[in-house]
Length: 163
Image 1: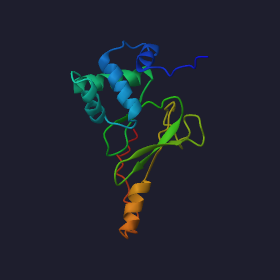
Image 2: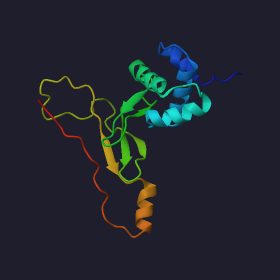
Image 3: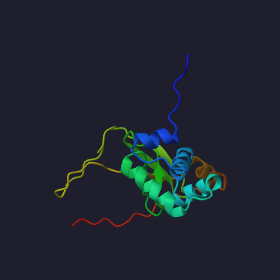
Image 4: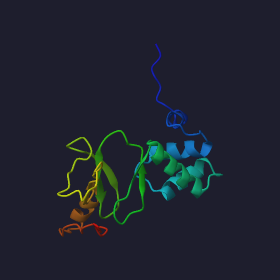
């Protein structure tokens, strides 16, 4: 009896209607191994396996992945854009204000949008992004061990503009 095998990066690219190249496969594999990575972080990983890949190729591949729905870009305030493969559900993120670690957290509502604004200003809302800011377990333990009991500094937030 044979067991089903997990889809390969080439399978995922083909299923998304994307051309399979060594560079795209390497980027997708790196992203699978290291979710919540920036394009620069992914480039460093990819360059180890596929040295002929250029940084622009990584950015192009990531843009293609997002457009095809096989990756998601998140943009925590004060951080570069980060990418992940978890796209099949509505989930949110925890971001450490000390080290920048990012973790997924399931949405308790489930479906998007999980929040409803007090006014839509005429927008047809389809998504609400929630980012929780605080200290990860490692940074909290380090602060506690150092005797630091001050609350974590709040994360920077971009200005909100409504027109």
